[in-house]
Length: 299
Image (tube, helix red, strand yellow):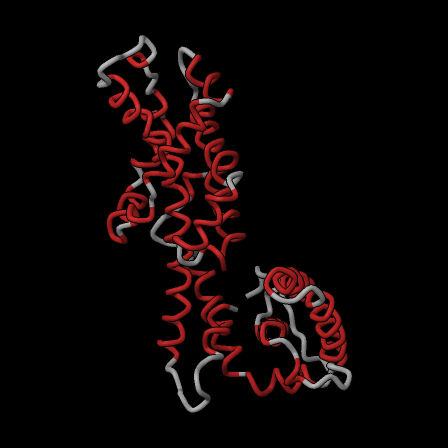
């Protein structure tokens, strides 16, 4: 949708090659992967700040017993070590220089908040911690201290290119990371199959522009299609292409997905509007025998 929206700003006379269009999509996918990787890195950096805090406090001229005994075990807990041992994570950080998006002032501020929390007090009081407990404290930093800080999240809008447009997706990726980090490849956001689908859908929507707009126009009930919100029209065109040219995607799944996207990215009534148009159009296409769906396992 975002790529199609970007393409809408090009002059009609400007013809882009399929490779150029696919490249635009890949660039947006890579941007999401960049932001996701930064979001993984941030809470790790906060935890690692325990070592910096220990050094600073122990070097004070007037030191207290507490200053000399800062607990630093969180800085090298098993979850941090496991994540930094992932070759794809390190390669992604190095290749794209993602450390530049980490604000050290925020890292310190978040660590000081962490140090005052009951969760952290309980964590460092344990003689030994399990892998589950090590992960839980990092997840606490992300979910409670970071996402719970409105000011920090607002800085993400300004400082992390792609956060504002993809925050829901990135939050989902972070949830998946904490559920099953071993499956995450930081060099590849999508599987080959999903990437192929994304490219195929994008090209289909472009190639079938006139056909899909004409079909949609018949269901607008005298509403001028020129007055339909651009995002709504793009989503409708994408959905129609899924109806007609992607036989393994159930029509119900298509409708539900585009209703949700319309609610999130377009106007308040867009979800209802998209639902109505797609429902009416699907009924007509089914009567005409133009919808041919099959099981994913079908050859």
